Length: 473
Ligand code: TYD
Ligand code: MG
Figure 1: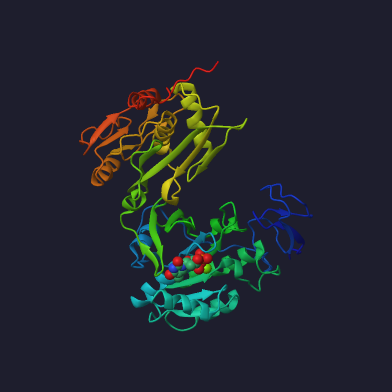
Figure 2 (figure 1 turned 120 degrees about the horizontal axis):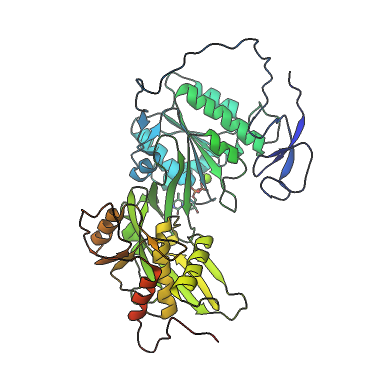
C-alpha cells in the first residue's frame, strides 16, 4: 500500500513540492504553498488506498464509426445561455462556471434553474455560500418564488451526493454554488485548499457520469482572471464558461472557454437589471448606443463572436506626453497587440508616437480577442493623432501583419451584412478571396497596407490640424 506523505501544494496552480517554499516555481506565486496530506502528484487527486489487482480485466475495443446517439440535451429556455452550451445541458456533463464575485453567477443560475423547473424538470440548487433564506430572497426579487426548485445550504460532498441520489427520479440539473466551499471526507486537507476542491470536484463529476445528472460547479476567479486555485479542475470538467463584465456597466457576457459538447467562442449577452439578467438578442445595437459621432479617435469594429457578428466602438486617445516614458493603457483589448500596432504605425505608417501617451478602450466593457480588430484600432489611433474624425457610417476590420500588410479575416460577408443591417454605408477591410462571388451589401473599399489607411485619414484632415508625419530634429 502506498504510504501517505505530507505534501506542499501551491494553492494557485496545484504544483506539489516535498518541502515548503516561499515562491512557487511553477506559477511564480508568493506565499501560495500550503502543507496538505496525501497528495502524490499534481494531477493525482486523493491517493487510492485499495490494493491493486494482480490481473486486469479485458475490455472490448471499438471502431471510430459505429452507432452513437446524439448527446441528449436539456435546453434551459434562456436562448443566450443555450447558445453558449451548444443547445442545452448535456446529460451527465459537468460545467465549471467562473466569474468575478458579484458579477451575477448566482443570479444567472437561479434564473436557469427556475426556467428548467417550470418546464417540468427536477432541479436542485445547493448553495455553500448563502443560507436558504438569502437564496429565497433573491428568487423573490427575481419573481421566481413559485418555481419548484429544490434548495439546500450544504457543503459536505458526501451528504450532497447521498441526497441527490435518493429517490427514483434523479435531478436533471444540480447546481453547486460554489466548488470552493465544498469539502469531502476522502481528503484530509482543510476546506478551501486545492486538494479539497479537486477531491470534491472529482466526487461530483463521478456522480454526474454515473447518474446522468448535469452538474454546474460555480468557481471563484482570482484577481488576474483565473478560476481560483484549481486550474486542474478545468481539465476535469466537460465545459468551462466564464461570466464576464464590468461592474460599472450593465452588460454581462457568458463565454464558453472549453466545451466538449459544443462550440467555444460563442457568447451570450445579458443586461443586469433590477429584475435580474435580461437577454440581449441584438448586442451590436446595445454596444453602439450612445456613440459620439463627430469626435476623432473612434472607429467601429465589425467583429465576430463565434457565429454571431458584433459591432463595437473602439476608442483611442493619443496625446503629447509630459512623461519621459509615455503611458500606454488599454481596456478590453490585449496590451501586447496595442504595442505591436503602435510599432507598425511607426515603422511602416510613418507616424511618430514615441512622445505620446496612448489610451485604447473598447466601449461598453466588452473584451475583444480577435486579431481582426487590428485595423479598427489602428484607424482609431491615426484618427486621434491627426484630429480628424472617421466617417461615422464606416466599419473597419482586418488583421495587421508586422510588415504593415492588412490580411483578410474569416467571415467577411457576415460582418458586412451586420454592418448594413445597422445602417452603415461602407466598410474598410482587406479584399477577401473566398467570398468574391457574393456581393457585399454595402460599399466595401479594400485596403492592402497600413499606408493606405494613414493616407486615407490624412486626406480628410481638417485645416489647421497638425500633419501626421512630424519631422523631429
Ligand atoms: P450574484 O448573482 O449574487 O453574483 P455572484 O454570484 O456572481 O457573486 O449577483 C450579485 C449582484 O447582482 C449584486 O451586486 C446585485 C446585482 N443584482 C441586480 O442588479 N439585480 C438583481 O435582480 C439581482 C438578483 C442582483
Ligand atoms: Mg454567488
